Image 1 (spheres, rainbow, N blue to C red):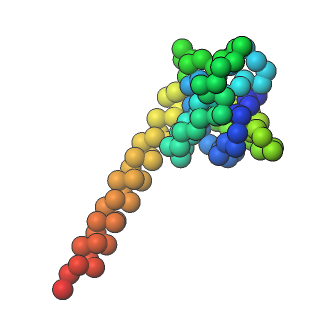
Image 2: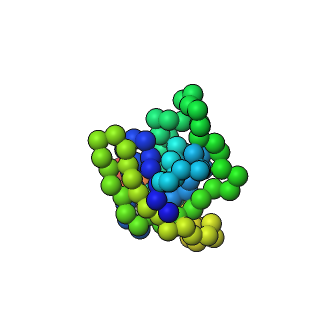
Length: 117
């Protein structure tokens, strides 16, 4: 599926994204709110909340996809995704949560080691 984001979108090939708001009857799909499931980063384009003849709407079912390619030009980002099932994203979210927990444990242990007399 070909997509367009009005602004600079931080996505890389292979990352999993979740599109929640878009102008759905355009080609490419004009995305206004997207979450990078892999990194946990949520981005909002400059068209979100702007009065337009055909404004972006919240999708009834979010679109999940794996980024196949992306290209940033002066004003927009054009990218292509391969649609995937939401179940395929669960392992990435669990991995990110586990990594965060481990990072916190390492941080706490380092602070305790430094404070010892």
